[in-house]
Image 1 (spheres, rainbow, N blue to C red):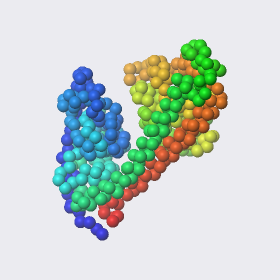
Image 2: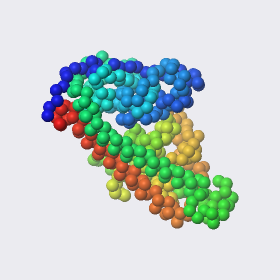
Image 3: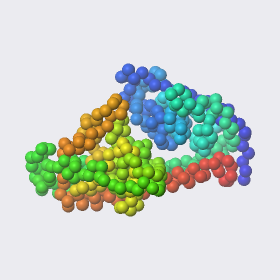
Image 4: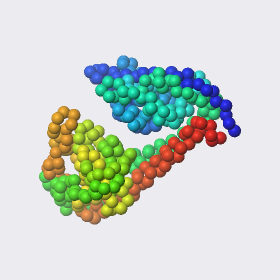
Length: 405
């Protein structure tokens, strides 16, 4: 059954609000519990939190606070050269001047508008132009004139409900991924930092350059147990997987947005290698990835020149990834950084002085038996999320266009 739609425009359905940045000089504005959303937080469809937080006083000065179920989208930034980030808040948040908030008029559903913006992202990006210094921007008058076919409110909610069900499944996958990775990191610290591994009660601690460590463990430098930038041959001809820096996550092992490129210039790696960002601010932000997207052990890929590739020598691949994620390992790398301000890089020699306690082979095998299935499940859930997104995105234009009843 075809539902009659009102022919209107985006601007007739909503009001747009601007955000801002409270003074960074005011310490009493920052570090509270209210998320302050900026472009870097617009990588998810549902916005539960942000990297930066404001106090209640900060939220009242120089920005705007919006309630849950408010649609936010980016109107300025280089991300607009290739993507149109849009999200919907799931709690009260403030936001900066590079975003706009959508206030829906009566008879217009915010979730429907959220999906409508996603379905029309290509058209919206086509209306972007350049501000000063080549920064991309979307002028809101160009956006407000976009035609919009608006069905009755009940139909809007029905359509949004169908699409939201896919996002519920995607969010559930992401939640499970976060839990699995957090458990693996805690287990690593429990066994190999605090030395509370199975059977530790019967193993005495002995003195070492690291302090007390379990008897039978050896103190080694990173290069003694990890290959740093191992030699890998990648053919120049033909397309191969290429991983730009933007593919790495700040807080997850997952590598997303992999490209296909010819050539072989850059870092080179294989399955189960760890990619560790060497440049500021990517290192400080936590960009680290675990390579699971390659199928065979002999398959190769290449990526950004700003990766340090880490491969297990006497440990396990999962141990190396979790080591690279540890605060101590990252702090040691950060202390070694040198170069021009804003382009500082890790010096590889810093790994020569980083000591770790090499566990016995039997304990490493027990650790692998626990965490390898979790690493594999993280990747499986990632693929499942990607399939759900593809299905949802295929449905988007058909549902919004009225071709699916």
